[in-house]
Length: 280
Image (cartoon, rainbow, N blue to C red; front, side, top):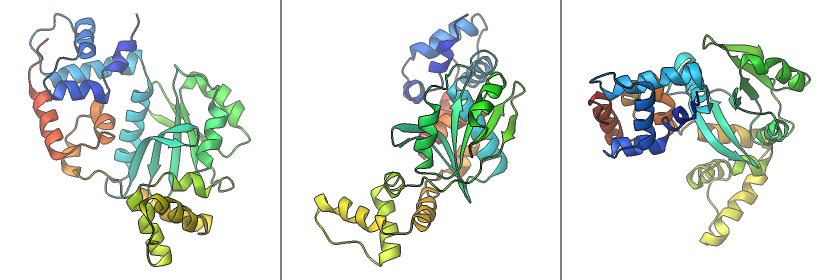
């Protein structure tokens, strides 16, 4: 059975439709395919059951990312002191999942559905902006991955069939490839301005066209290890603002909501949708 449609349910686009009262064809199709003839049910039941199918039949990137968020950020750390980032452009790659507390770790996800074709170039890109990198994969990929990464500082995590995260190889700190350019590009305008002000006592006075270039040139003169420390401090401030509301989000939707920058009204709409009866 082709289960790819399950991956189209747990997306921001699908839930934007659903929360705005619009019918979503992927949600309806999955309901008909996996939960047909089940009678009158609320949407929270639909979501949880479809997530169980995702878990057993189609462990895609969303499933891995949601597991990392639930087990690492919510299971081991605090929402107030730790931040997770997702789909962050770094050089020619996009980091799947980054966790920042005292240190920052990039987690590159390689599911049962992925190949390792671009892995080497992805890892090199990540090391230009962060000093800890791990690859998260399935049991069947472990031996091949271990052979590839055996003599590298890259860590290996395995998401087991029992849904535990097994650390097979711990990541080793690697600062040799950190690049001012790569870490500066991670920052928003307000973030790099705060760093410039902290180090130089003020922000350069220039027109809008030259402002970015002038700030970048000043940033380039900061020792790379100090610059990296300041960048992590800024990125850590991108945490969830509505902590109590976020805690009420059901497990299957934690990652989707966390990376959607929900405001209070979004949480209210989500709660109302989940409590409402499914209407196909």
